[in-house]
Image (cartoon, rainbow, N blue to C red):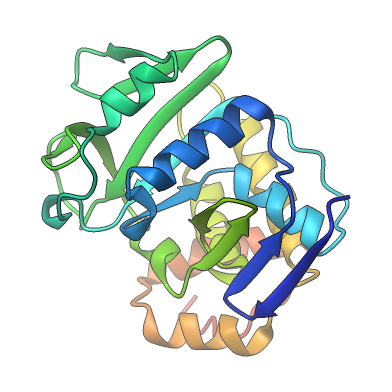
Length: 239
């Protein structure tokens, strides 16, 4: 396990990277491009950080690398390269599907960008002008940006959702999975929630639930996920 220390609740410092080398190279270049000023590493990869820092029993198995963009239409221009240029320089190939959703491929790795969808029907993809990258709008992404954690890794830094925000997000989306792999993805979401439940701070959970507008359906989804993992979540009234 890498030597690490934590300055405070919002900062984690690693002396060396625990990510695979291609992922380390990607994250370093994304940081150099200024991405993490308005972006997060999301999906399953933050679990690697938390499993290492908190010494949790969790085996990360994924080649999907997902990034979230905060308020995609208002991101300021930072750095001289667009994100596709950065990824192309690292050997990634852009693939655009019929709906406009863009995926970047390198070997077995798949990179995608996601932004928050405020509800209702909208375009399947939103172009982030300064970075010239196409992001897929999905619900509850704004939840992940509530007091995110900065992770310093030797010569670069990234941002990831806090353990509490990540857990609450996955409690909701676990019950909303669709598609051919929905059962597998739901099981993975719940497994991650179960692991994070060992380290989340109840006070922070309570604060996020109190300040984030949760619909009755969202509360119901969270309650169902909590039942599935045997966890009691505070402030879930109205379910």
